[in-house]
Amino acid sequence: MRVNRVQAAENRQTVINVASRLFREHGFNGIGLKGLMEAAGLTQGAFYKQFTSKDDLAAQASRRALEMAFDRWSTAATANPQDPFGAVIAFYLSMDHSAERMDGCPVVALGSDAARQSPEVKASFEAGIREYLVMLGGWIGEGKAGNAGGEPCNRAMAILSTMVGAMILSRAVNDERMSKRFLEAAAQSVLKEPSVLKEQMAGEA
Image (tube, rainbow, N blue to C red):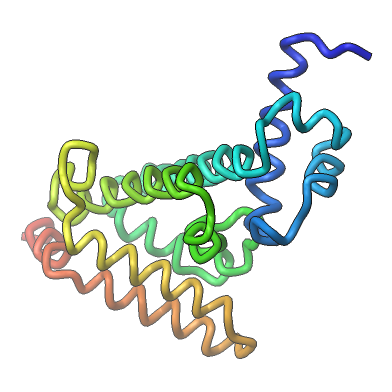
């Protein structure tokens, strides 16, 4: 049956959304086109009407996953306008987030895989990471450092590295207590940032 343009566009978005979750769960090479398309409720033959290659889909799915992750950061921050940074840290460095293999941070789930992917996939990750850094930079008093017109600030990069690294280590061990301690130690570390403490003290004055 012939698919109209509206349905084709909807099918494309469905595939991107499904792939953004399944890639996080299985890795870019851990699931094939047949499995992806079946999960999206479509035939494998329909894939090449929507995408030029699996790399094309990987880039689109990575961008979607990072957009979804950024939205979750924004939601957490908006829910606690008095302490948006603390709210995001509490959400991100949590055991609940550690358990979210399909919906968690794509940098944690796919960062090492992305290093071996095409420039298009890396570009999607770079754009998303820069968005993370812009948000972090604003919270720690670095304005809009990290946007297209400037370099990311070192503190924001260190904080993000700590957050991502702790989440990777948390997922890598069987010992639930150790897993939780990695997350708690990272949270304590980033919340002791000098600029964050300075802002907290100014707010208490």
